Image (cartoon, rainbow, N blue to C red; front, top):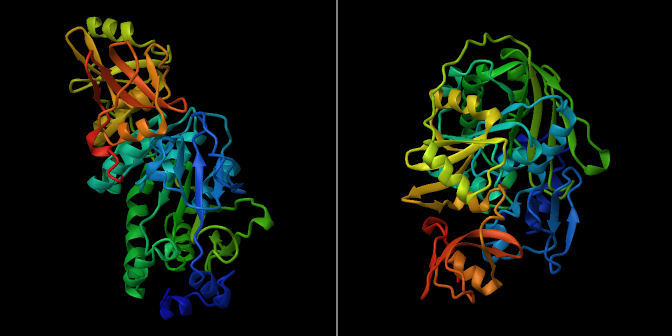
Length: 451
């Protein structure tokens, strides 16, 4: 791997940077594979996988080899997320700063493809997580990954950061994993080396300030900002920390961690704001930077208008109740012809957000009603809602992969009608069993193309 000389020279003098060992680890060709388990779905890594724990995240594991995740049905069931280990340090940050005293409203501003959002969804079991992605195509990937994760308290939006100014002082916590020059991921994506330049670093730094400046009004007084990049460049890291303290009235917050983890604590040049650098020659992970802040300035919180979401008719409510035993904590609303469920406590928040933002996904899609029948949604199959009321069929690995390819499968059953298909107990989706065939309802746009 060729590393740009201008990058290597620009890092001289930064705490923790050792040019010789830094170059050596990048030239070694060594790759690190890590996953984070879904704590809400029953799964343990395959016995053929040799694993070791990620020190700063209880659900994180390193794998000794990279398996074919595409051909693992458990991956498609949302049993785990393939996430870079350094990024999982977010769990330690949250553990260190969260008082655990209330249900927080959390914004993941630059959320796609969803790794950190799924971690937020796991940590804030009772909170509300808004996952935003400005790019439409990436928002679609975000919807897929969060649907597979299954948690119901995540709302996905597709908005520019400036749109959040319509929600002044609304969020308790904001995560900005900012678009960056990407030097921290050179080992995972060597092609990114050719796109790196000093000029691009400067452009990214300007964009990071714009994103933060646009979105910070939606953070409440004493609210927490977690800023992160996968860049080594101080212009995108410590200099942004200085800008946040000096220009945006933010107070830097130190994070506690174990010295043996190999994380390097740095201080910014002007305001001595603490940041945390991950070097691949010092720990098992890729390049990463994060710094944490508290908002000092107050923001007036006006009474926000709500968009009253349509609700199912009494007849439709009864039809849904005949099919699924929805927990008492949930209520139903309609989006076009689909019926969705959300926790009652978060319905007012959804109605407020729907008035201000473009919502891609909220709650769990239950399905659509056709005549007297409920056509169950794929979201329902992968959700954490109780599905015991539906018949289910356990699939072999071969049949599970055929199902995930959206190909024909043969089931040995006398039952006819809608049925949940599972692999190792994990729901994969729906089939409709007829007398002479089985209709496969796996989403066409998600099907496996690899043979």
